[in-house]
Amino acid sequence: MRSDSKLTNPDGYDKVISAEIPDKDRYPVLHALVVKHMLHGPCGALKKNCPCMIDGECRFRYPRQFCDATEQGKDSYPIYRRRHDGRRVKVRGAELDNRWVVPYNPGLLMLYNCHINVEACSSIKAVKYLFKYIYKGHDRASFSVDPAADTDGGVINEIKQYIDARFVGPPESIHRICAFPMYGVSPSVLQLQLHLENMQSVTFKEGANLEDVISRDSSSNTMLTQYFKMNKVDPYARNFLYKEFPEFYRWIKGKKIWQIRKLKGRGQIGRIVYANPAEGERYFLRILMNHVRGATSYENLKTVHGKLCASFREACEKRGLIETDKSLDDCLTESATFQMTRALRRLFATILVFCEATNIRSLWEKHLESMSEDYLRNHPNKAAVEQMVLRDIRDLVHSMGKDIGSYGLPDLDPVDDGCSSGYSREVQEEMSIIPDKKDINLFTSLNTEQRAGFDEILSHVVDKRSQVFFVDGPGGTGKTYLYKALLAKVRSLGQIAIATATSGIAASIMPGGRTAHSRFKIPIKLTDSSMCNFTKQSGTADLLRKASLIIWDEVAMTKRQTVETLDRCQHPDF
Image (cartoon, rainbow, N blue to C red):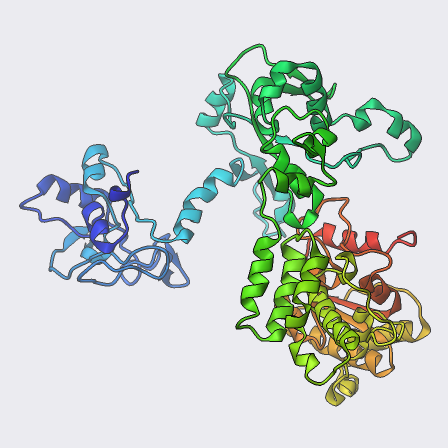
């Protein structure tokens, strides 16, 4: 496993692996073993009915080509050295040369005297091939129960004839008989909860009384709150960080309490759940939990040198755990010396979304002049220029999936705002899509089945009748052609048609197409209770209300939870 022992080049492969017939005079024993165990075939033209033959070719690609030196191959395996040295041996009635040798290691072959194919894993594909066997699950066997064979040439029902069953081999059998562990993680890892005050997850059965659920002690007791309580009553517990706690205390899941461990050295490893910097206070709470020992409450975490801070971020700054806004201020100041104003505005928007600045208003006031130099040349009115810069930053922030209203910047003037028409930006973007004249007339060239689907779907759009249609057909039968015709027709009527697809390639084919995750703000990690990342008042929700047609191409390829997440967000109560 040392780095100097790894096979990284063709010279290293030749030291370990051979694919040639050895010299019979110099290595008589090895020569006999190679002839006995390591020659493939014969197959191909020498024996066309060999089991390895598929469609007239050997599935193992023998005979291979002669090669004077080992080369790095393109299909995960090297091209081993197979010199045309004239050595030939007679095997199973055919004369074979180096092209028929299965790669082997001379030492292993001499030691075990059996067929051992040795290959060099020269790419990630080969590594995946090897490790897939660990995760593929239990072995399975397909067998048939047929007491009386069918000799009449009748129809064979393969579904009834063959039974797919689990196969328990000797190694697994002895492990289970002797009660050996089949798998395990050592040491075990405990995932530690992380939540803001009174914002923990609470599970309850459907139909339960919510007041009773809230009043239960178990609803307020979590790993984190019980960690605080244990620190209050146990001086020994205050010596440990939250992530170190499982090493000395064990979590009793049923009672939701921490209990000191009686046996030392058998603890778990604690890992605090991930928090994204964009989550704000929860992220800074995680930083504090990783550095502050013996915390007894949320207020205790916010207290630094006897003074209560207003937020977890402020507490992190005073403890020196995160940088202040000075680095962001220096970044903007330095960029102003050589960047164009448009690039500065994009940089400012990026800082708003990804850098979690503490005093955004101060950064805005200090660098507004640098970000508005291009507008100031033609507009002496500073108030109007400020609105122009705000609109640019709003568009940039919106393209990153955020709302400028959450950053405490000056308000946009509704009179000059481009969205003052009463429509959200998402609705305006869809309404601004002008259908191509060629696409508008596509419906005239639809075949019979396409035209039947087109008329049925369009009638529901015109009559405002809700309905879900599933368009099915093999590849190349004109599904996308039908979608283009529908999109163009609905948009030509002045109505909104949303074009989405599961994959980006399929979305790019349709005019105005977007991926479903992008358009509907569907989370990447999905559960059975996931929700889309938009609110009732957002532009996405407004777009869904006003849409007359939604096309989701390749919907059968996506996960069930993806469709259910969108459906959950279109509930009347949402």
